[in-house]
Length: 239
Image (tube, rainbow, N blue to C red; front, top):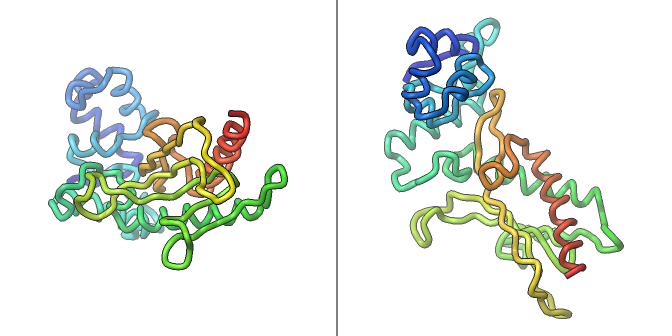
């Protein structure tokens, strides 16, 4: 695959395709999207880069004092892409599944940690204290769980195909927390956030349910998880 720096991408696209129409046909996108790619208003995603035969331009360090250097995040991201393309992760259906790479696994652990810390700083809502269950081996929950009784947000690792292979995908599930003092209401239903990874300005970022939340850091997503848990509890109390 060809390595490009961010500043060289527009010239490379124009030299190869000549206009937005030709690029749109190659990538199966709209002319507007192709125009935005050529002008630098839109970054190419992984599928675009695969079709063009390039490493994402925004992954390659600029020349200068960083010539010959590559960040650890960039190394892990590109390594994961290459391993998937070489078939080392055969059966993995999603190139942006967080747990399919070392970087994604580290980010997932970081997300649970930062959410825990931020919730403890908030302390309580309406007199109800945030509680944290870290999951196995010391916790009681099957996976990390942020509780705001009588509901919680559970951090789950799941397989792309049930019962096959290692966990690849990450979910945050908002729902009722089992306890000995009450029974579950019919509404609201459990809310599931499926998390994926992409790149933005040279950094790995989170997306929720494809486009519900796009391009946020673990710090930002942790705050959104806490916010949504509070909203979910409000909805539960009113049901």
